[in-house]
Amino acid sequence: MSYLEQNPYAATFAPSLFAAAAEESERTAFIRRTYTHLVGAVFAFMAIELVIFTMVPAQTLMDLSLRMMGGYGWLIVLGAFMLVSVVADRWARSATSLAMQYAGLGLYVAAEAVIFVPLLLMAQHLGRAQGENIIASAGVMTAVVFGGLTVLVFVTRADLSWLGRYLGLAGLVALGFIVCAVLFDLHLGNLFAGIMVGLAAAYILYYTSNILHHYRLDQHVAAALALFASVALLFWYILQLFMNRD
Image 1 (tube, rainbow, N blue to C red):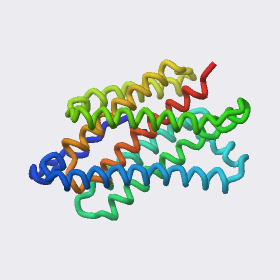
Image 2: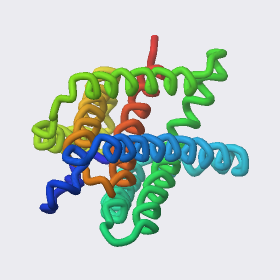
Image 3: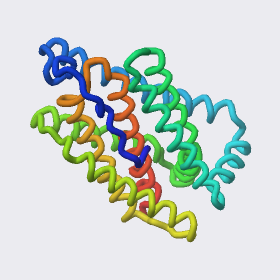
């Protein structure tokens, strides 16, 4: 759920190393590896959450969530998460160590799992009160939106790398609103959540396009991390919309 745009292909490499310039079989294998790792990251995220909610006492989770969300605690959490995101992304883009790439992906998934705990806890309690599984509903909606956006890019094969500069700016603006909301005790509401869903969708379009046109064949872990971050951001705000329904 990083709001700062990271360029996973800033360095200059020989054109033959890019998936777009590779043979069809190599490009297909790269795409398959990328989405296999994305699915693995999603299941790892679910497994970590299951362990947390199963092994940690409910009262402890509640106390932890209150500390994370209370006062300026959320700003500290966001700052720590952004720092971890930068480190994880750098590790995942390592050109010399596959183990470092996996360490970056694992670190990011674990950080997402931790930062999601307060929101999932609230959604769980709200869902029980309303007699529905809000988390599952939001998860299905996230999968449907992600699948539709992915198909759109693969069918059109559009190069959307030009979106990068605008997404970076939009991410900074969104982060500014979040900081102001914490500092001045503001409720951003469903309008902001809806805008963030749109921003997350744009990130998915952007990174999916980059997988087709700009990532190198050895960057499937970094590509999977970028997609996972976008999916997590999408799920975060779709879940909020489900929670705030009248």
